Length: 254
Image (tube, rainbow, N blue to C red; front, side, top):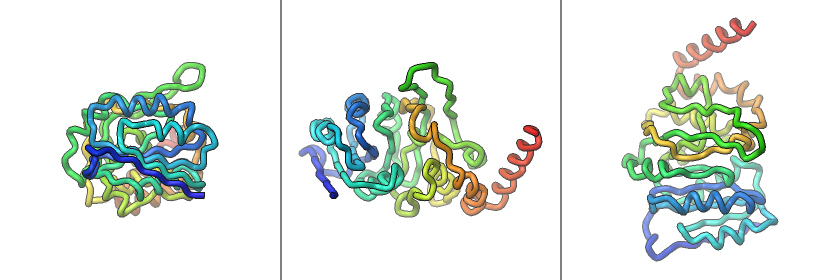
């Protein structure tokens, strides 16, 4: 059964600059801290889009009680995280879309970056820092800094550092056949698209839970398709450069 509600404020009668899209499923334990990090932002032209897969806990109650920003809540069984995020892009009204998990946290740098955004054809991105929600030390390094096409071809960037222009999702969606790396596939396509520019701003904008879904799962289908996605989106030259690097790496490993 599909359930949707939306709550706006009187002061929010214009298109928001940023739609924060969050896929949830029985996330009541995590949402208070996530919501608190959003509520603390000094940048106020924000709406929240919650796409819920049919939670049976207090998720809906927490969403209804969150009043810091306008909220759209969509509850319907989905085919996974990327299906939920695709639905979120169709509900969102912002000029830029930002995706975070209910187990992630926004930092003050998010507002600092959002206040600098001007060009609706530009993908803005910053940095994130890792944290560990499970006992034990953090043994995970997030790549930070500026991404060239070649760097992106070699390495996945953190999904939680990127604010995408809404126009990206008029051309692309998350491909559901990639269960773990659909965001990586989309980023390769976006970085290779000449209709959009990319701007790196050296700010920490989020704390990323390194024990989340993508950290404990692999995506063999994406790894198989990745060279062809690079070739299609970034051109033959980048494809050959990437293939040469992978062959060299394999030789050195052996």
